[in-house]
Image 1: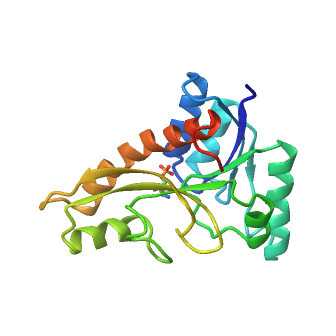
Image 2 (image 1 turned 90 degrees about the horizontal axis):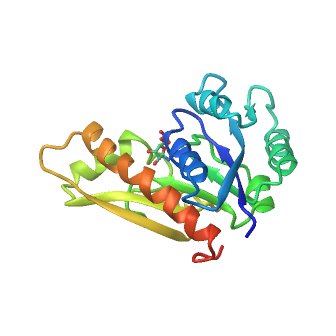
Length: 199
Ligand code: GRF
């Protein structure tokens, strides 16, 4: 069976991207990372890509102030490497409609909460965990979903839960969730690669 080609978009650390790359390398999932794009020239994600010998591109609004030009630049690179699935891994910019339509139903994201709870505009990073703790939730977790035009809204492909303890800080909870993200994201991609999940 042909390996599915993964193209990543990441803004910062890229630890989820690394977990997926590692799963590809170990053969746990039948996929191959073919390109990494970041809007942040100093991102650890780009450094990780270079360390892994994966083509790395810096494509940002600074370089392409017109939204359509930015979308076209992203599409051009994803097409150049014949990407099958686009993996958002901590990509902090909203993807343009043109990119979403070109790869409709083939763009995945991971969100650090149990969607549909704690999603939507402004719900990212520590804001998610702060809200979960403030509402005294007993559990939280992470969600892999398909990206559409609405924030954190598309079809849910997988979730993992973690407990929330009364003395949790947002940082501690974020760490507990991130550990599960590193397990869940490769697992979902593996299921797509072996046909268990059909996009
Ligand atoms: C993760 O918490 C993920 O849920 C969110 O952004 C963060 C990315 O972390 N979408 P990393 O860059 O993969 O380390």
